[in-house]
Image 1 (tube, rainbow, N blue to C red):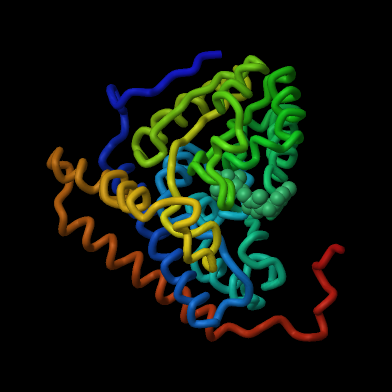
Image 2 (cartoon, rainbow, N blue to C red; image 1 turned 120 degrees about the vertical axis):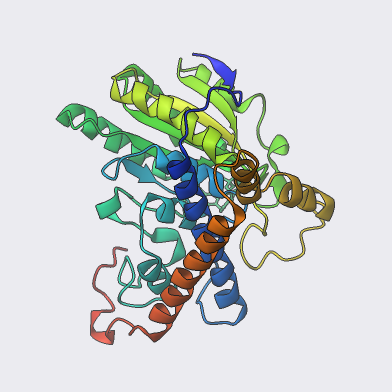
Length: 331
Ligand SMILES: Cc1ncc(C[n+]2csc(CCOP(=O)(O)OP(=O)(O)O)c2C)c(N)n1
Ligand SMILES: [Mg+2]
């Protein structure tokens, strides 16, 4: 039951792993730029909540997981899905309502699930996936599979009762679950300090759940911290709560363009210029002479090509046949 601000010392993250994290973050960034373009050019039905700016959280967390470990995601879920191993083309296909999508084009942005990579699903209900993730951790424990579950949620989900019911159970039964709170400072258009009393981690501490706070813009730090939390969960030492301090660069969703009434341009610029997760990792790796700019440029180019191919695939893919309009739909 310790609240620790993890320091950037003794990090055991190797170069290959760091480059992989850079690549994953670059892929998410390029993916979200395309989603924004698809929205603006009216090619995507509905809205999407972009993960741009928060990449180090999903990537640092998922880098510490096995493919068969579980995650549950949120309405801002593209980054989680990609970091856990979802394919770019099937993701775009889902966003565009095409049959090749993860839900045969019937779920869209907020319902992407991919059982093959342990992704139990994005969730449009704030806090809604906490029960699913905790249930998955319960099943892993009962079946002795050695898997862990990660529940991603935003600071806004701290107002949801379900989270407290399941954290209580997870602590009592020492379930292998890590609750990852992405504190990006806002719940929609409201600063979290107006909705959330006290310290965020105090909630986990009340249940005796081990908790930590990290800079969510530092992929290496998120990864190193998660490695420890995953190891203790696999050892049977129970749940943990990880608060990742982060920031979304765009609006709450793609249509939230004029944000001046709830946050300033200066604040946005500050995060983008001084705390960008890609720039931070790139600069560090170059400064430490662990890589050079040409390697990173090549990664940027490769992921850009992969993302552009994915969009083309999805744009050209067929819609589901009209005859199956009521299949795979539960309502
Ligand atoms: C139960 C529920 N209440 C309200 C909403 C509407 N809503 C969608 S996102 C959101 C804010 C979520 O904020 P946070 O959890 O901090 O996630 P972020 O958008 O910052 O990633 C709200 C209130 C919802 N989807 N579900
Ligand atoms: Mg938030």
